[in-house]
Image 1 (cartoon, each protein chain N blue to C red):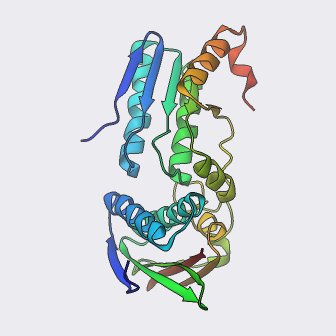
Image 2: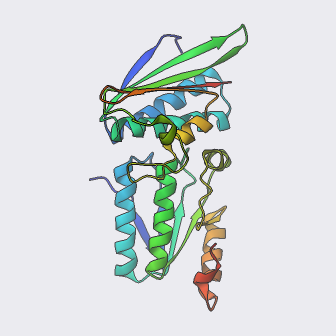
Image 3: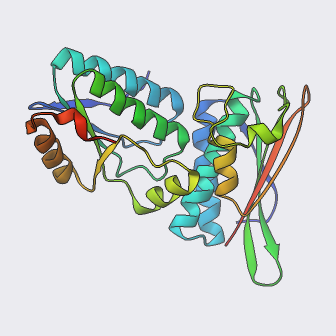
Length: 134
Length: 127
């Protein structure tokens, strides 16, 4: 696997499936255990779905990251130019949803990641970045 | 449109999910199963997810919906074959799949369904 940043479109249900498969393959490249792979793939699935459903489509960026000589991990960014999130605190709460889901997408992705950053501005879009270390 | 096959074996509807499902496919399965329960009058549904490498909140909700809808249509559902990594991830995600009966294998799932259907009040034991 290269350490370059890769970008993939996330615009449809099929793209969500593809995003999962790409993340799985990169997680294997980094040397994640099966449980770690499953966690980051599941987090990616939640965020990719949000990008399609709430953001009206966007992109996923994926990059291998390093910290010190031994520690490596995977960083994923999901970005859309959709309506944005008015109240991020509320959106991160377990069970909160404006759609018809369980409201576990954002909060679940955060729980499955080691680092979680969210930026959103109403009318401009949303960007969520997660990192999972090996 | 692509569909997940539903097989009828004696009085059990069998579903084995072998593909990485997109959301529309999961919703179609939900619809197809409820229709099939009514059409065949089967009182048992077995869903094999041993091929699924991950279950996210959407798929978890779909499994819960199938179990609830089946129950209302007088059928019982069991989900079998969940991989350990999937179970660990689901719980960490905050999804414990309440109301869904599970078994480790197809055999154990069929035995559980038989047992549940033979009980006088089979619908009372799911918390």
